[in-house]
Amino acid sequence: MNKVTIAEDIYWVGVIDWNIRDFHGYITRRGSTYNAYLILDQKTALVDTVKHTFSKELLTNIQDITSMEQIDYIIVNHVEMDHSSSLPIVAEKAKNATIITSEKGKEAIICHYGDHFKIQTVKTGDELKLGDRTLTFVEAPLLHWPDSMFTYVLPDKILMPNDAFGQHLASSQRFDDEVDEHILMEEAKTYYANILMPLAPLITRKIQEVVQMGVAPTVIAPSHGIIWRSNPSRIVNAYLQWSEGKSNKKIAIVYDTMWGSTDKMAHAIADGAISQGVEVKMLKLRATDLTDIVTEILDAKAVIVGSPTLNNQMFPTLGQFLTYVTGLKPKGKVWSFFGSYGWGGGAVRGMTEMARKAGFEVHEPGIEVKYVPTTEDLQKCFELGKQIASEIS
Ligand code: FEO
Image 1 (cartoon, helix red, strand yellow):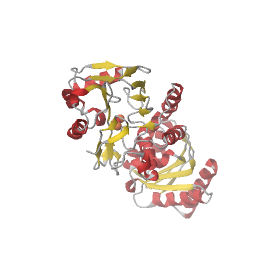
Image 2 (image 1 turned 90 degrees about the vertical axis):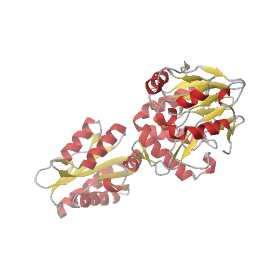
Image 3 (image 1 turned 120 degrees about the vertical axis):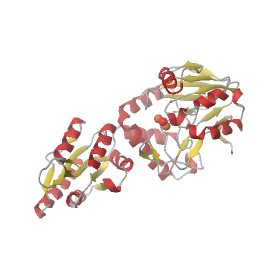
Image 4 (image 1 turned 90 degrees about the horizontal axis):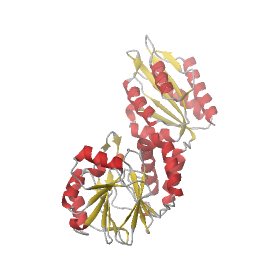
């Protein structure tokens, strides 16, 4: 392998997963990477491992730089299997290594791989001296698992925050100044929306806590995707904006349709909103992945959702969408619902109930039309679009 140097004696030894397209339901059409880092000093530390299907590649990457016996510490920042499922084989080969992880990390390692490892637990502020370098640990519980923690390398000022600040982006380049910045930020936003959105309040607090601890990284080396070295504050500021719920004058219209009635309504609502000068994104469920839909919702001020009625309920794709989006807890948005039915309604009522239960701010009444929208119905839809657009302007 070509050695990838982050700083003197600090190497990327991760792997590139060019072909992954579905990461537990998240559509990863640009692939991903599992980043691991090797730090050479008087003591040698490996920070994180990789998905088990790439364990041989990880071992080769490490052994191109040092021998497995030289590894003194394996830092496990997070036990989700994309980062830890090579741990058993790495620990077996790195016979002299102690695993360093949080208390919850220890519990998760034992649950996943058994109770036969040499493990030392750390908490926020604990330090591990490697020689000239010192690692400082910061627990980040529920960002996004209970075990999650960050490792900060001094004096190099390299933050290794595992999933935080990552992107699912396979690339032969490793650094932010080497890739297309629009693609990089698009993937960072998609990652935030689909993985971290429900944790927004914790993210803001964690960033403040880390800053107060004096952590001021010149490099942020996450566990997925590209390493931020040219301007790490760019992704930190983006996280602050996203977690504060900063949104645009934009309406996301998410809908599905059976025979075109709900589609006609969706377009009339869009026309009304556009007439007020707001941006509109039309997101038909069977034409757009949920991964992309929630990314559009992240910075929209309003979400208008439409469904036909099927068997007295919302259309199944809407059930899937609302289950996903209510779990992600998007904040500070206006929600409204519309739809069509034949002989008995139910979709609008069902969707509204789900949204209310999730604590969403619902604009009522919604609109429900029988069979096919009339000219008057479409005018009402146009007015709804207009009204919501003016509410968010
Ligand atoms: Fe990339 Fe939470 O694992």
